[in-house]
Length: 255
Image: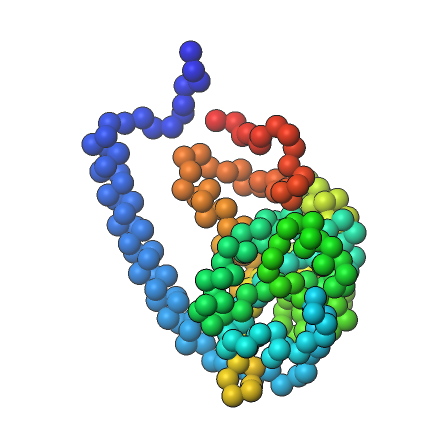
């Protein structure tokens, strides 16, 4: 006999009534999302006055040159600091796995999509090859860019944040495992910030337009949006692996 589910069992009519109630909430959320998008687009643009020079797979480039002839730049900051010995954050890596399919569509809509990390370009190039990524991967190593835009913390800044200090001194099990996955100490690993940043280029001037950092859902791996629609909930602290490091047995959870 199969396992008895603890979830509510009902008739098709009961399902439809409950689904109709949920649809009302989803419609309200869609309306709220539209208003949020409108406010996001209405944020003031801030001119970027400092000159930055990045290491790319095609040599040194300025921020304006990263646009690659387009007027909009959208970038994700992958947690991969100079002190990470084994590779980037597994969660950020999972997000990166979902980006390549969007490249052609964004590029044809005047948007350049790329990723930043603070590790040196040689390490980014090797990691990109390992993961099979196609998107441009740019190093912010030895630049003030990630600190100026809140994508990373200096050692002094990190020491001033109580939450980071507490996690370093007494890390939960999942975070301790994460530090082993990246091959770095938590005091260094947690200085990197996972988040998206956007810029516009008009009349030769680059403008900073938007930044969003974790734990915003937009900073989660893309497959999380699919898992939100599955029948069973995920654990509060799910384990995330790089795609070439999953155990042979599938991950299962009670229930």
